[in-house]
Length: 227
Image (cartoon, rainbow, N blue to C red):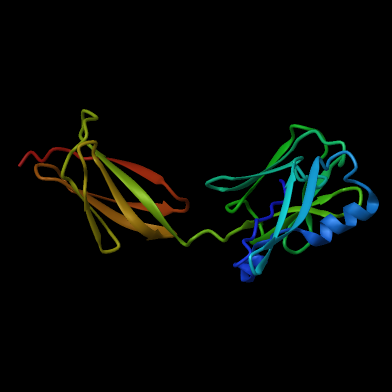
């Protein structure tokens, strides 16, 4: 990704802290001469304006090695890391918060997913490092999943037709089904729970559900009450 500066007005000098730059990386690469072909424009002007001083730093397309080669994409389950073609790096390794290498990418187009629900996954900041010199190229965070989930209960009749206005109860919650027969139970703690589905003219149905992931669904078929 490019490094970006903000242009400061002469009367707004306190905002000089808005200049954002990875100075540690930039200075190292300038000293090593790595910007000879990547740096297209750098202009630094000192402006004198009616009793004040403004600083402007303008540039285009300043790219640190590895910045464009590593893709970090957030998903509903975690993060996907991808590697694209780059003259600067030959491969990367992904390290967990404890410093363990969890995976490597060495070919353009390769991807790896780190999901918060994976068995043994660590929660915290992961680093993507250049395999050649262990330099950190990017980071991402895997948050611990919430300990509550939503569960959709679909209530149908014996003809597989949805039952509207059926009542679904679990853990003190009571929800009515919509025209599609769905009732959503929010913030259900992870674990096993008993729920009941009931509708006028039908025999009440009670069953257990193991809540383990977000967006779970369970279907219930009610039998008409002959009485």
